[in-house]
Amino acid sequence: MARPLQEVQIFGIQNRSVSERTKRPWIVRWSVAGKQHSRSFRTKGEGERFRSLLTHAKTVGEPFDELLGEPLSWQPSPDDVPVYVWARRWLIEEWPEWAPRTRTSALEAIARFVPLLVAPAATAVPAGLRSYLYSTLPPTEEVEPDNQFERWLGRWSLNMGQLNRQVLATAERQLLLTADGQPLAASTASRYRKVAHACIRRAVDLEILPADPWPPRPKGRSHRKAARARRLDLRRLPEPHTMAEAIEAIASHQPASRKYQVMTAVVYYAGLRPSEVVMLRPRALTLPDAGWGRLEVVEADISFDEPGDPKTGPRSVPIPPVLVSMLTRWVNEHSLGSDDFLFRTRTGRLPARSNWSRAWHRALRETGQAPLRVYDCRHAAATTWLKAGAPLGEVARRLGHSVETLVTTYVGALAEDEGLANARIAEVLGS
Image (tube, rainbow, N blue to C red; front, side):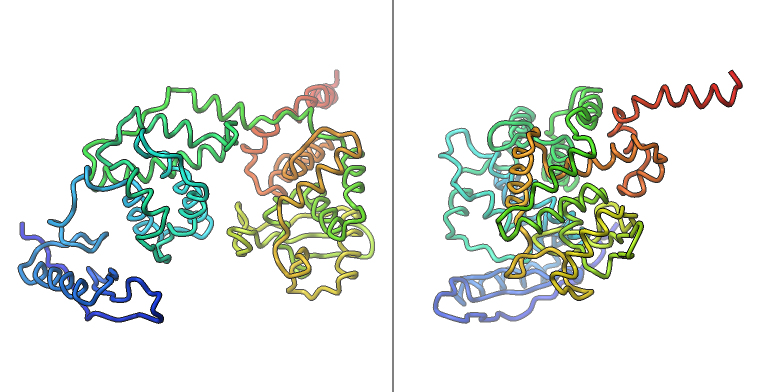
């Protein structure tokens, strides 16, 4: 069967130099099957030679790779494709299909994964490499070949053909550890592993690699481990009166402490995620003069102060009078408009998570409590509601969970339900 004709268009050379500091001002643009591609060069001559090669390949009817935009005959073997180059190519392919939150998650994983796949003789990984990759991996960013990090990767990165199960097993173990060697949270570890494996697996799908070199996991182990990790040690979570005392202690002489106090109260009394708290606006609040109010969760921080949909979608959460009172005072004291963010710094920026965490840990120390993450206030909210006898479906809805996830995560909070259930069943049975 004849190969279908491809639509290949090759455009003229452009000089995009805006100053003498532009290192690669000459750009060649072309498209394959409607997908745009470009390559930049130091001199006009280099650009013209590259363009003439493209034109020749089109003229003789050579098939083009629609992902990379180059003639198939130009494609190198796996032994010639560095891992970091392939990772960028994979991101270019997937980027248009991803939501902003997925893009951020993929960048985090690949920026951690790429520096792990280097030659054994490599020098120490340069400080700042992970941050550099996170900022330059998006397809929208320009990469300078002369950058020190690019030079280091070009020298030490493994090629795709060098990947095998032993190499990837070692990289996987390191990928799932923090900087101080502690295991990552189960959900984070699973996310990083899936992204890294998807990147390698795509090379198999495109026949760049003959088989999937990713090592299989022991059967049953991952499920048991994830289930254990999801079950919280609910004995560590403070009782309601202790939480109220710790939240009260956050306020200090520091100007920002009141902000962190109200933010923490929202996490505990409304069960919001921290990423949802920092994107609240007055228009999302219903604050009556008395009784319960309501909070509409419609936005979350998905990437460095970029609003997006909450992780599990919008939801409406009733809030108790104590939180209604705190939020009413906060809105009135700061004369906030309906579209303003509730919690921002004096310069209008997103509050630093590290400062929030420090304020919370200081309050815990002052009240004699063990260390807890800010996120654990959400867990404390869930266990408080469950112990109060709130229906599982309603607790799950307020948290933005499924009932299955709720029961699996907070199974310990349900342990005391047996006696209550026995009493109610006995009442119905008349015994």
